[in-house]
Image (cartoon, rainbow, N blue to C red; front, side):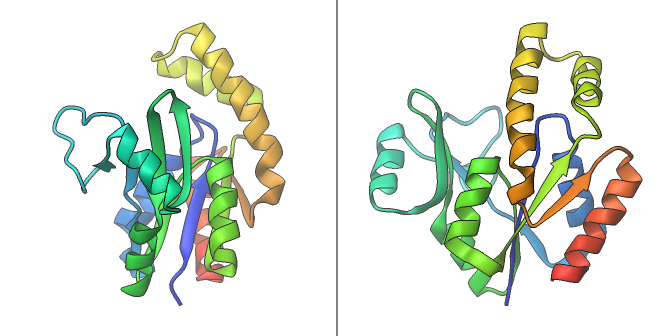
Length: 187
């Protein structure tokens, strides 16, 4: 049976880098990224069905009411993000392993919906201070935004105990090796 692999992590923990590593370096895992839905407009060259499924806020709400989402959240007023159940189920029915990049609340919802078919993995920083240094070294966020990300990270790190596995990303090569071991054991 195919699996759903959910990776969650605070911003700056290397989650996207790890997902990219798995998908490009390990085709034998048969991983296929789950395309999320959003109510925000496309940016640049983004295309419906490729980067996201672009829905109006009204369509998003209608689909919420119809229970078509495995997980979703309203980040700002009328700005929704979520995972359509049909996206996940169609990939599973084709024998694909689905990989998802979602927050800790979404991960809990996926686990609740799919039970043992979902493998939740939390990518953890070596420390909150190390995470702050990573975010500061990026040079992309104001000190206020970094403080908000750190506050959110502390909440997310406290949720790590509810995940099936925790991978500490202190050294990228070690984190890649550990993540691959977890997947090979569970898939």
